[in-house]
Amino acid sequence: MFDLIKFNPRIWFFLLFISCFLMLATGAYFQFVEELEPCPLCISQRIAILLSGIIFLIAAIHNPKQCGIKAYSIIGAISALIGACISIRHVWIQNLPADEVPECGPGLEYVFENFPILDTVKLMFNGSGECAEILWTFLGLSIPGWTLVAFLGLATVSLLQQWNRTPLTIQEGE
Image: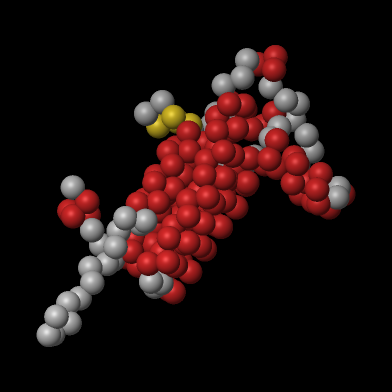
């Protein structure tokens, strides 16, 4: 089965980078064209997408040997799984009963200007009441739900590179 999708790991890492780029472009579309303001958890997920994309781009440019492929695939999968954890938190907040939803806090711009960086990071990962709003759905999943699916896909394809070995060439005379 894997022979049908057996590409050079460099190509797979580049495709993973393109996927991250498209996810960020989709987020920008929702923000600037559809005018959906991202909540703190949305921004955290975008940071995780960006980090994963950078890792995959570096792996594609570097074109490492098998040891490097293993390292990049594990690091890429870890960054995608961190993003998946953020997405799980976001989906969980969206599915809380109305009386259990956290209160809305000040905007991120205000928090960045007036609070220490650790408080800002804590807010970004904990989420707030605005993270509970579901502004868009497709096939029953909200944006964080689809982002979770994408992160799990990125992590899976990244880890599959562990077994995607480039064939060794047989030298003459062997």
